[in-house]
Amino acid sequence: MNPVNYDIRHNNADVPVAEETLRPGELESVRPLPRISIHAFCESEAMQRTMERLAADRRMNKVSMRVTNGEIEAAARTFSSTATPNLVILETHRDPSTLLTDLAPLAEVCTDQSVGPDGVNLCNLRRS
Image (cartoon, rainbow, N blue to C red):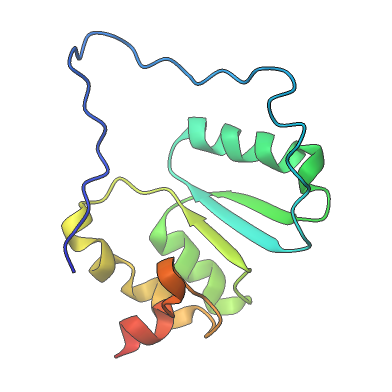
């Protein structure tokens, strides 16, 4: 598996990145999410604020969402004593080439229903 580089490069590093603006009515046709549980682990305050704004959105009324300051280790500690939610969101600034290895402690404590892209069971992938 090849690591993916998620860095966004800009031609001019001195130009600040503008936040994406949301136009009124742009999301009106989006349906509410089903009854699921989500736990987000955020490194930055900006991501934490974004997740908290998401949790307050009316389309998230049925969603049980928790936002925690922390990264992979915090998620592994949390889920070693509690059940994993339907969706785990991790913000990380780790090197993409070592990310799967870095996720090993989390894979050891997640439930067998945890899946990633293309329906791959992440726990079984890491335990093999």
